[in-house]
Image (cartoon, rainbow, N blue to C red):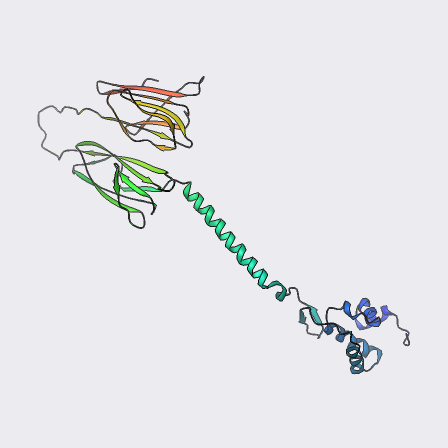
Length: 308
């Protein structure tokens, strides 16, 4: 006031904002972020007014209004402090660490549960590396090699087969002359879900010199199985007038049946039920009124007849 200076003029010449000049004049020190700010402004303001800087700072300290330095500071090049962006002492607390660890543990548990649930809803893997389907051989036995999940149980033609810790298996099977249908099954013992594959091996006699005797064609054999895809279906299935199934069948393949005379199939789910005879799919006749599908096949003169 003695210098006849306005607050605006002082602010422009000292580069101190007007609000801070007013706070200094009214001694409202608690509004500042820290003592470093206050001391810096007092020094600049005192020099501008021509006052003794050390005396003004001493008067401020003796005023008992010095604000505690409880706010994190970052020192700038001009000596004026600036409030840090993050107070890590407040962020990294024992409670916050416990919460973070708990969230990580819960997340890991949920992830593990979801992964385990998906595993339990999936059929076990089943790969047959050798032999190939529809293989012809003169040998009286064949080696079957493949892989499945390491916890799955494997059966070949209902015979339990050992697997190693990676799920690989090897099994030597004796062959009959003619056609051999081999069923390989992988079973998840926890969920009872199974994966079934069949391969056909033809064992022929060793090559001989041709003779003039006529070759008599061996009687054909007919083998059938049902495969349900996607969702369960109610199925009634008879072989040679003997009922084999009359129930709701879960997705997967049924066992393989030998047909001597006839076959009859009735299903409530035409879109999910498939019939295979000698590994070839036989089309079902769909009743558009009832929504069911059926088929009857007979064997006459060693020929399969499945009228639609």
